[in-house]
Figure 1: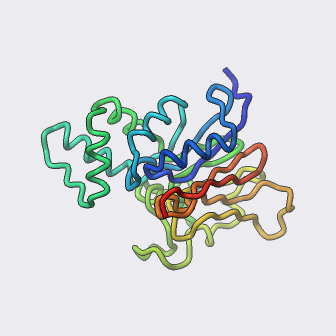
Figure 2 (figure 1 turned 180 degrees about the vertical axis):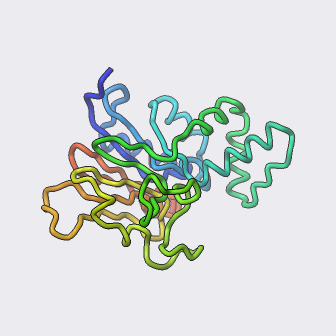
Length: 232
């Protein structure tokens, strides 16, 4: 059936199910009418990863693979095989405990997540693309973790998207990404672009799990909607 509703893209949820519910209510999201897409990093760190999973399944939301999903998949496979999943951090262990009972259903779903979703109206990735090689030359690791350019392994420094040029953009098709909570919400148009044109870049990780906000972009309305984090 062709999509006839709105396209709603939501930033990194990180287990903040209450905020996700509030955001979907605020935009009057209707399953079966609207299309819901997530930037990845949906479950870990926050208080209710199982609730987020249930919302995703009930809504039929689409999502790209985030670096946290990549790690969660490894951990779930290890646990299913009787090995130590080695979560490393207390919040990862909490997420693993909450989701492990889902077993193969969640493992299969995570394994099938794409690294990007490319359509005429938008390009969705988790972290970003290689600014020199473009989408086709972006490695799996870059899709999941790129932040600075040149890469420095940290959270400060020039961002990858500051090095993009005309080759990387399709007019009217925003490149939407998450992952970069230190940067926060980003809505950017190229120099000389019309003020009523869709943005070229939209960074939607506004750090909800860190006490800031959860953000969505409504594509057809060219509009950002946010809800404040419940925990500060």
